[in-house]
Amino acid sequence: MKFNELHNIPQWSKNFWNPFVSPVLHTSHINAGELYDNFHNGIKSYDHKWHDFDTEERYYKNCKKLNPRYHNKDINYTFNAHGYRSEPFDADSDLKILTLGCSVAFGTGVDDKDVWCNNISNNVKVYNISIPGASADLNAMTFYQLIDIIKPNIVLWLPPGMHRRSVNKYFLTEMEPTACHYNETRRGKIILSELQHNHQKVLPSKEQLIPYYHQIVSNCENYNNLIKNYAIMNEICENNNILFKSFHPAFVLLDSYHLYKFRLSSQEEKTRLLFKTILNTEELSIELLEGAENALSSMPTTFIALFDRLDNVVNYTDIRDYTLEFFENQTKEDIDTDIKYPFARDFDHPSELYHQFLAHVSRHVLLKEGVKL
Figure 1 (cartoon, helix red, strand yellow):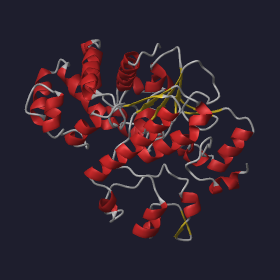
Figure 2 (cartoon, rainbow, N blue to C red):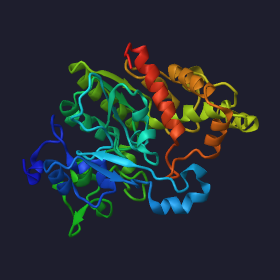
Figure 3 (cartoon, rainbow, N blue to C red):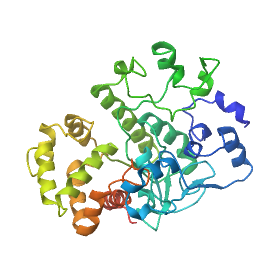
Figure 4 (cartoon, rainbow, N blue to C red):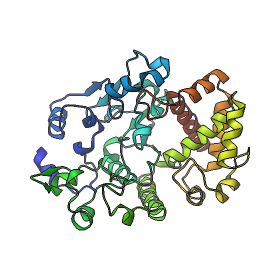
């Protein structure tokens, strides 16, 4: 198939690689057409030292605030022939795990070897189709497109922020036809045939940029959109005999990580103040979550409790137990260091320790399902 013919393929098509959304394009000087040609010409991989928010400019701006281990340290971003930070899609294995999410699951700011997916197990192949800036919409669509190419046995989903929406034709033509400052344009007009493939471009969350944002994004609509995409991926997995497990959205999981990190740190006064501020208590439980607003999360606790009841969601009680166990096995020095330096090299995304935590939780989740790693 020629590159120009890709525009005629419906996005909800199986066995379809869409080069327009490949995360390697976020950094590379190549465009989607060149990536597509390179793939068919046999180019197998791409290596970069900077990517997404992790830019050389940001590094020098925030260098003094970063963990000293990042000083003069190379970070490798290795992409496969399809442009994903993943094992080659044609790499065979008896057990294949697919991970997907946004930049947190992608591993912005951390080295290849430290990313969550690469620390689950040394005995399986893990394919990471996470895309920085992705919405739940894009995750579901990309998964549907690539499932017959990768043929995974297990899917682990770390949902992106619920407020994100993929750009869609209805929004562009009916709600905000003049949003040319944000979208790709030609002579001031939106090119729908191109833009419909650029699903990594999520709607900006600031109302002054797109005045109609509040009409399609609210706590209720956010939750409905999350559930819609959960249901899509869950059904795809059921129909293909794939084990599907979804975590709570990325920042809910991150909240749990930070809360118990502080709880088990040696900085007792900070711990006491943190819990007093957030929950006016020194204990965190699912009962409290159901009745109180979580001050660190953009996801209301009512929705956390509802999402928690879905069959293939890793429940919050287990997350709590896995988090406690993880930090009980960390040294006080490592915990205090992560409190002092909580960010990866890009000074925006979580550190390597958080990726170790995600891998720890993933192993427990799979072992509970009877998976031998």
